[in-house]
Image (cartoon, rainbow, N blue to C red):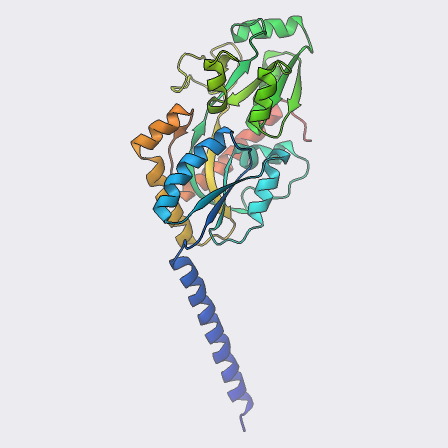
Length: 328
């Protein structure tokens, strides 16, 4: 007959064995990562700047990892649909989030209801660069520069409209209106491409858009570019002045891009992904290719991205408060 001590010992041994097996199983799952398709979830529609640059990087990432990579565009709700989907996904490295300051810097200060936490619900993997924005107007607008646009807006209060397809566009438009002292009507869209179509069609006066999305239309004379949103001129479009240089004070807005996983993503998976993404982004030929699309590509460690996200939350809270944008 087995006594109490014997039963307890057997139970402890069984629990230890299960724990050991579970640990071994988890180790096996991460040690052979990846062994199936990886999904990159994006908060914007196909054709957006983030979508286009991600497709280029993902082609090389799939080759480096030896597995297929698919893009899953989930636009809507200012990126909250996509962010929430990834936040609730299994932290196994097969569902990742490629996003920008829209979901991880601005939304907490633009939206009354948040279904995710940009810090607690995600594991930072790697930053991939910046996507400068620029101000574009329909050619029928009688303004060849920002000063003329401001003068026209003041002479025609409430007549001008601006579209937005991201938080960068929302905050840029509101900051411009506030800092320049002009009255414009905001027209929001799910993403930049449909917003751009309405500006090209003359239904909307202007918008702030990433260089990648806007530049082809500027080169084709369908739109007129007036300035970039960064503090200094962008080397990607050196002929365009900055908004500050054009006479709008305290204007410095940059859209950034990075890779994240759900919270509690295993460290070895983070290291593997970070290593491969950094190798890709730092290749001169890929940096050059992305530059032609309007992206200033560079990377860093997961720890650097984590600190950057926290710093950006402070910055974007200030930008949004200064622009007098109310939560929706």
